[in-house]
Length: 272
Image (tube, rainbow, N blue to C red; front, side):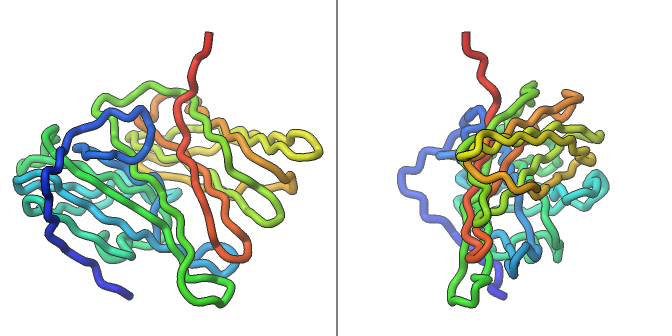
């Protein structure tokens, strides 16, 4: 296993600033709070084994303390230990197996939240963190090299939004591609989400709706069942309305190669 890499970043005329994105996804600059919706160190279907390659950069010319929170799948994360790292000015760290190496041997799937804080642990609005992430696996078909997908980091909203419904489009579910849907719950109480998956193909549109309970400070990811084939729209609804700054996503994965792509859901728009 490749070791975690700690690095110094050479910054030449870099402008760093907090950016409000409304869930449009990767911060071009930086922010005090950044979320990776799904990361892991876990076996997948059809011979895949997924790990997360993550880099974290401190774009300030000052030392920055960063708290790293792990939201595990299907289990409440409210009592888990938090990893604190002091990052030198204009520096960063990186690992190709971040969940195992940086989060002290954790395994499985989860979400990760990065929060810049002051030395006393209170939120630091001046923090400027940039995070990039991809999920990768050795090729399960026996070929050399790896297969991967970029999974976008999301700027966290300092004032949690009240979005109740989020959508995504453009994935596929066919005999070639399996599909997962997921959501995280950053709140301190369990939340129920309703998920509607509409798959449109030559035989029309097949829709299925199910509810998922997500534990506090946790995430859930589920394989979409059935035999319908086509392009996909997914609607996620926070039924209780108490999840706060929650995020949802879906991925399509090639059943032979492990190649994949993902979409992060965005808040529904009201059109007059």
